[in-house]
Length: 403
Ligand SMILES: *Cc1c(COP(=O)(O)O)cnc(C)c1O
Image 1 (cartoon, rainbow, N blue to C red):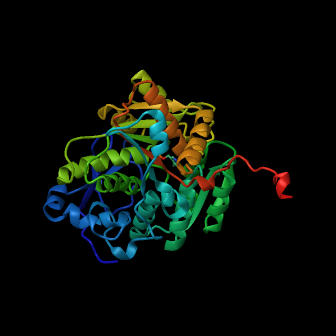
Image 2 (cartoon, rainbow, N blue to C red):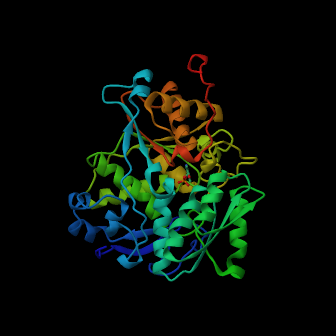
Image 3 (cartoon, helix red, strand yellow):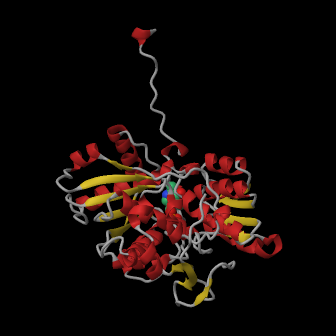
């Protein structure tokens, strides 16, 4: 890979704005909040041309100037691709969506390891390599652990992954097969996170929990840049995002801001919609109450395991993006998720993961409640391949006349 100049300048606490040096190992800020990576966007504006960037080979490494990795030798890659935008035309027709309006799925299931966690973990692992880290640990609901295991093994970094005991079996096995040590924990993802924190000293590992290190969000922000590029630098009206820790939502919001400062896009912003499951909806509750932070959700449960996150360190950043964008937070139940999944698969031939199906269910409900307009251009995020999740058995016996 050729060398690129990164325009990274420093890291900044997302709550207090306190600055620290880049190119050093950092976890949370002194205030116990996530760090955000900052760039010299004025300089980048003068020398990085959006159309030249768009003309490079596909995949998020094309945005190198806006990513923190300094040396190409440290880039860990598994063949990342641009993920396609797929219109749900049958669905749109049946819901009366038309004119300028459309429902488009950004299918992140096409990335290495089958989920958008590849974006964040490719960055976190590449930066770990650059900073000389040799052992990493993380809590996961499945997909993040799989992406970490794959990228870290490729980089020769040891990994320790903690997941709730009821994490989808395929995730637990793919994590182990891709070279990580994986542990089933009797508890939810925050209990797994506590174990990772506990072992930090004694096990000497670096904690890459969601937003507890600064770089996963930089990987996730590439979704926002890629989306803008694919839409001819014209953002959609509304984005439905299945929200767990919220890295993607926060990351895209950051990307929009950076792109405006670079002169790549104008000031128009999509409304950001945080989608959760009724069995675990801390952001929806906080949004409805007008709160700045979200309380932990007790007894969290949903088939959409990727968004079963009872408490998020970046809660205030999620809520801020939703509010600033004039968006909203909405919860859908598991039944609606299953129905939406079946409908998209049978009607439009697109097999969504349950979290992706949640965005479709939420879109339908939002349309009914007039929270969105049929003339809106809506983008839904399908964050993982539907093939990783259990499917109902709909097979039939061979008909008699064929016997
Ligand atoms: C992790 C995950 C999410 C939630 O993403 P965040 O950016 O952490 O909110 C949604 N869907 C799937 C399939 C996931 O793996």
